[in-house]
Image (cartoon, rainbow over the protein chains, first blue to last red):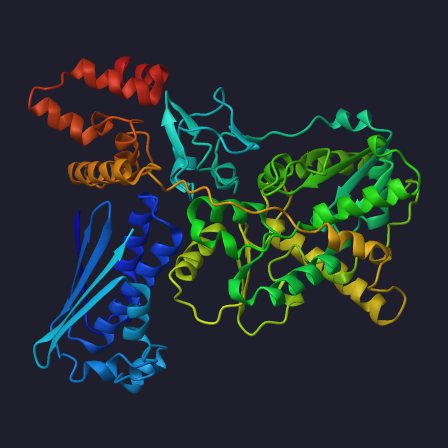
Length: 136
Length: 457
């Protein structure tokens, strides 16, 4: 089953749309509550990341009875140093974004902790594609 | 649907229901459908919040109650009276007058429910301090909220504080006190005056408990009428009975929104009332969007219990009277006329030792099937059906929304042709004739309505 969402740059007000939709679907499938929480937290973080740092993008969700796979593909600017971005507390978020309560530098590390598989493809000036999978 | 999990006090009288869909449109858990021209409740989705009762224009939604005469099955008849009950009466009626009249109605003992308030909040605070890992901890004070979390937010059941409600602690206290005085426990009957349907359901089938300590539940509106009538008849000639001194100022307002939160001391805690507000907030809690959250006091009704469906009078007036009474009490406590530490504290060890409820289990109403493969098939079907529906949420199919109809169809509780748009589509393609369409509408809206508005006009 395939679903898509659009992420608009700077639209924090609508952060959480994709994760809430995914949550509802997984509840219908009677997936373990702990697993639902993991994927929802990871997708929410990724949504906020794309809203805060990227020039918008898309979320593609693919679901079968064994796993959920979520791809967040944005339109740039890309991550120059991926190892640094994976460190807890490291953030390039602007003061404005931080004022709104985001940008604590926990995004990518938090995603990694919550999923079974994480792959980040990034190219500066082009964009970032994050693939995450949680097995049921 | 599947087997029923618990008792519901909210019921619909099919002889009075006019099939107007108001309850269905306002039900926060989409638990209502129209069939044969009448509203019907999916019992496993209902959380007894009472929104349907509030919006019903014909009085078809009602709250089942125990027969008042059943109090006489007991030699000692204790009425458990919540402070919100007193709040309903106008200022010129005193507490002692209410105590006097309620005794004359047939009770041998009057005990205010919030007598156990300080013991309750002490136990709750201790539990929270011992369960850091389960934060945010959610109060179980409001039984509609407990059920809402069980059916709609099952991932949060472990965050619920498994402590008995004040009414149960007070009931335990009275029973112990009277038994200690030498009364046979079998002769003691405890009757609770309830402001809402959820508390009846909780008393009949307590969550996490085998059986209730309460012997009967009396609806607050019924009791209000009985008491007020007697007061009016007697005028000022009533026999004076001193109102008891068991409840403290904190107890009187425990039942108001913020009544619990104000007795806690956490950096980040919220008191939220009204069921749609609660649901909006719980979505965020479930997503871990709110950091460092420690405690949540959640109430299904606006203003807390004064907003209960069985209270009489305006909830803001009731709340104000309760605040005034608490203020008076607090002044007496400050002046040393009365102590905050009441007689109930002599039994605190007994109450603390027996305050835990059993495990509160999730019982998701969202799941389409236990088996993930079947659930997945149904979900695929739902998505396919949703594409065929107009998303007008017009209710003509007897479901609250196109999404709910799609789910009903996938679970074999409805047909695609229940949708009027689909019916027209089938007619255009000559797959359905007008008689067949009317037959479908008859199943949903009943023969009378069809006759009245389509066949006889």
